[in-house]
Image 1 (tube, rainbow, N blue to C red):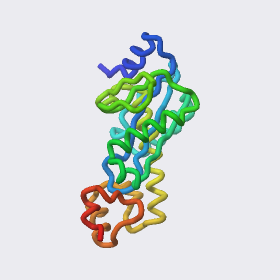
Image 2 (cartoon, rainbow, N blue to C red):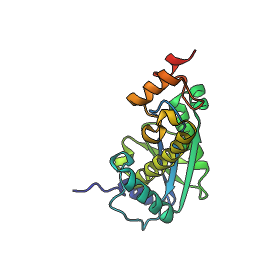
Image 3 (cartoon, helix red, strand yellow):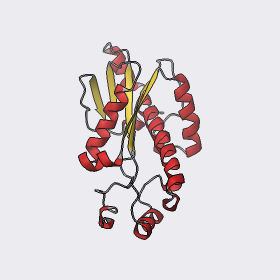
Image 4 (cartoon, helix red, strand yellow):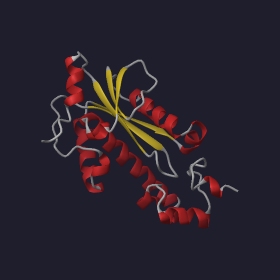
Amino acid sequence: MKQDLWLFENKAYKKGFLKIAGIDEAGRGPLAGPVISAAVILPKTFENNDITDSKKLTGKKREVLYNLIYQKAVSIGIGIVDNISIDNINILQASLLSMLIAVKNLNTRPDFLLIDGAHKINTNICQSPIIKGDSLSISIASASIIAKVTRDRIMEKYHVKYPLYNFDKNKGYPTKKHKEAIAGFGLTPIHRKTFKGVKEHIE
């Protein structure tokens, strides 16, 4: 039986909430680049059986669904926190900050938040963290797709600037070739200097 991805949204609707935003981030694990979150408010009438956790989708499928979500969503907000801030406040705090920024960038204020993971964010809006929420909630799954595609596109632009690091392929994640490039060519301004695999190469 297929998972009911509207379960958490419908529970919130029954409690009287009207504008429910799903929130997820992309880019906690990479050695380079920003962490990016998306907040997505979907209309109640939204239906698509292909929506799921972005990690379970091909790049092409994510692009198709990204466009569809942008066409159909009530509102989408993006939050970006760069590698310098990640190094200053740590990746967990940077991820939560990017989620908060994404919520603030919605042009419709939500009255309830469904957040992927175990942590709440610093806002007085009612919220519910959901572990593995990107596989359980259609709003969070949609946010995961928006965040992932947004971040991938940014890393593809960085590839043009720093072609030796293959950011178009690895998106900053610690692949063998990426680690070899760091060892051979040093660090770029977008590397996270507090991350294992990077800090060893700081002179």
